[in-house]
Image 1 (cartoon, rainbow, N blue to C red):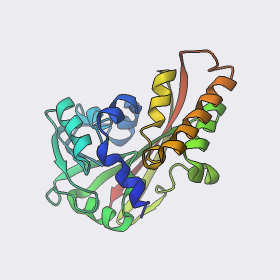
Image 2 (image 1 turned 135 degrees about the horizontal axis):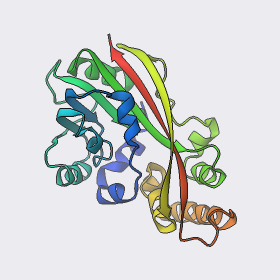
Image 3 (image 1 turned 180 degrees about the vertical axis):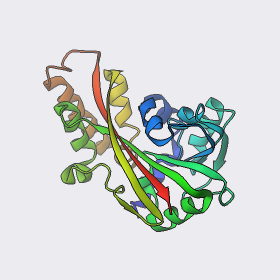
Length: 245
């Protein structure tokens, strides 16, 4: 299972996460749900960054999230969503009641075996599971450098989606799609975004300040970001689609 301290670091933030974290491209939903479904569940939904994209694809949208701070933001943003406190390992949803489960930027925090069993339980027979991750574009050296500072363990393996793959217990792998897009972002918002990642949240003040200074130095050194208050940030979104067996 993922480091519990890092996983729990998100429990006390909500507004900052929603304000500074990126959203997701609508094309990701097209991969997972090309036609409307009866019921969709966003698991590990956070503040609803991906949940909001499901509104036009499902008659009923539910969200499950373990952080009270995050689900409070989600409820205020998306009052029509049935938002519940809960975990991937104990989903508070009836068996066989969901057509599509989505997990955006969260599956690597789950305890894989029990989470897959629970997801399979709540899905209808042959229901879909979609795993989604945003990550840095390998062709953007300054953002990759910032990622290496913030996530040295991940950067060392250069694997941002190590929890995904062709094999998940109880599921058949269907396809993977990679979506490239560009986010226009202010420098101050880019720096604030890093303050919402797990390694910053668990760091002491001195370590956090040092990482922030290193990322600022990266922006100051690259000609595409040096002296600019706003710039284009390339993003890659990986989408994995599975069917329950």
